Length: 71
Image 1 (tube, rainbow, N blue to C red):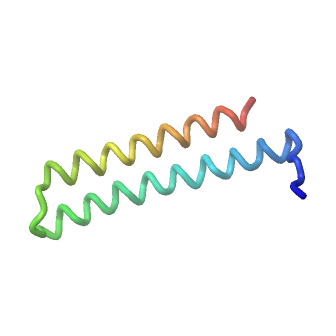
Image 2: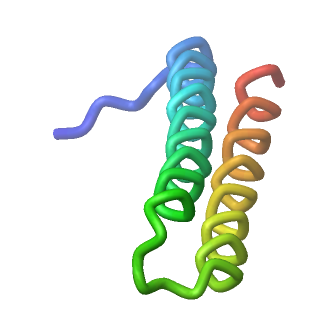
């Protein structure tokens, strides 16, 4: 049996999801910076490009979740 969430609970859930995804985005960017500083055998442009893309997609998801939580 599954319990249906009411409107208030859904708003709170999306608000928390938004904050979580924003934190994940910041951690991805921090990981990119740290990996670039370590000078491993990694193409830096590829690292920055992929890391920034993932961070921006995650940030976009956080923005959409925030918008849903405020409706």
